[in-house]
Image (cartoon, rainbow, N blue to C red; front, side, top):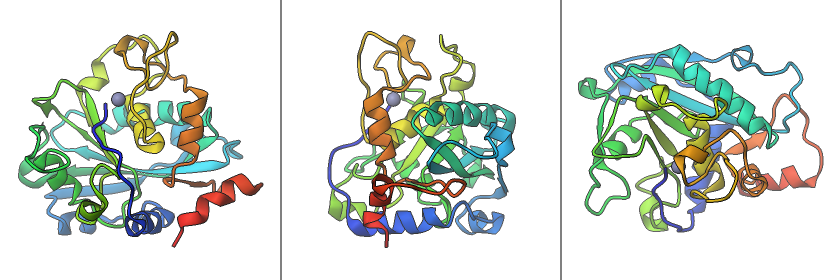
Length: 266
Ligand SMILES: [Zn+2]
């Protein structure tokens, strides 16, 4: 699921985003506490935990900050299941995982369900913006919250990408590349066991695209029964062009195509 509009992105926001992403996942518990979280533990997920090869074939890498809200029923193992599936799904596009940081945090007031009522005049629900704005600056993009329920929302997950607000407003919301995954996705049955809601939301953010119909199941299909771990070739192309992905540190980059990704690098 996705809510966004199609405006351009100010270069400043993009520069800030890339600057923080290039440093990888590097937050400390104190960074989260300073932002108002009541408890926080942070750990880097080892490459072996998502089944990465010693010499990966992917030429691009995506870093992730995954926040598990205390009280949401998400466990680290349940999240890692999504990370492993997401790694397998993105691999088909030549995108591996980079730095993956898991943060277990107690939100201010112990909140683990979010009120998804639209904020009047705001690009996302007030609760979403409030929590997203508390993520420390050093956290890698995109950021994904694993939480309890999205109250008042039929969707199981939502993502809000950069460009969802006007260029002027974007300076106030530089943290829009954030997804929200409800616990219901953990036990909701899917026809394709290789499918992952995490991969689905990340795909929205990377390709800056919505759902698509079609005769065959795929990752961003409009109908839930048609969701699968397969990615359409055109979505792969869009995802690979995202400024959120970087040349893989595990694999030397070759060719002009990948270097063009640095056009906006500060
Ligand atoms: Zn979706």
